[in-house]
Amino acid sequence: MKVKISAFILGVMISFSGYAQDQYQGSSAGIQHVYSSQISYAVKNIKPTKGKKVENVILMIGDGMGISHYSSAWIANNGKMNIENCMYTGIVKTYAADKLITDSGAAGSAMATGKKGNYHAISVDVNTNKPLQSLTDYAIAKGLSTGIVVTCGLTDATPATFCANNTDRDDEEELAADFTDCNVNFLFGGGRNKFHNRTSDKRDILAEMNDQGYTVCSTIDETLAAESDKILAILEEGQLPLASERGDLFQKATAKALEILDKNKNGFFAMIEGSRIDDCGHSNDLPKLVEEIGDFDRTVGQVIEWAEKDGKTLVIILSDHETGGLSITDGSIQDGQVTGQFANESHSGILVPVYAYGPQSNQFSGIMENTDIFEKIKKLLEL
Image (tube, rainbow, N blue to C red; front, side, top):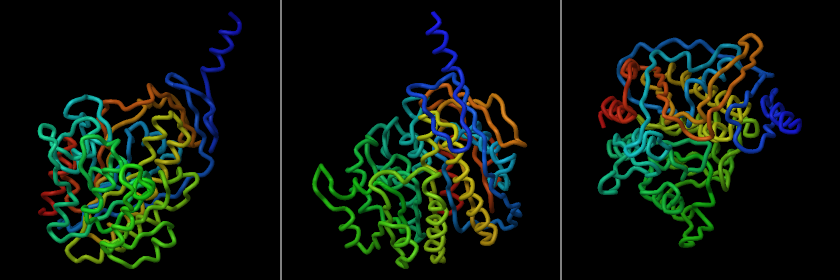
């Protein structure tokens, strides 16, 4: 009995400080996780824009980031976040066509195509499995530039919904092959192993896209130096490193994307994803989760500051779903300390917030379907 009691007491509280590693093995549902921020980052107050015309749209997705995730990062950063510069907020329903609890495939498809998707499917019709056009397809057809910047592999579910079509998100080599037809101007992320050294057909998708006129880059320095209007930058065989290891890589890639896309006087559409927030929610790792959201928020601040100077860019920030069922149970804004408890290691059916900055940002207030994100962007860009 003493052994069982000791084991229970040991498992009741796992405490983190700064960049501590979670040593708990298995599900940590019900365990209190404590994160104490060692370094907070500065947040700028950015003025609202006054214009009404939308020429560019930047859709920023915090994969798996619910309101409680945002709250944990807000507490850790002493009660300030760049997202707070947004002019309007709303609530988004995330359910899939065939399940209440969605995944990034179904949720991403809804935002990319305007149609509810089945669980695990990538931008295909739920009845016929026929490919659906995405926002990047519509934007390209109208002469706009397009860009995708992610911290996961490019064939992961969210970016794939804007560039590919498949009934199963796990068919990543097939998804990579679809990128040869997507024509997106700026592609940045990881997942090189799905584009070359392929087990299914031995194709070298990187070489094929190079033949199509893409400048193919494998490092951030190559990416920043590239001047082409078509860039494919895949920096890792798998996902990009976590925030504590990748430094300001996400911000640099985003800035480069805006530099390239802004050359088009017709305007642009970009999807920028903080992809690895979701991974940290799945692993119930509160410290790494807070770090990922902090990195995403710093990128948000950079984008909003760019949009404020531009005056014609709408920035939309939201999540595809919530991961981990996180609740905030204690903490201190002054000390940058947050205590949280996860309900599970999967997704939840909780509605997620949407934030908007720039012209027509008022269109994103209230309660809406995730398919409405597509419809509103399509209308505002007159696609």
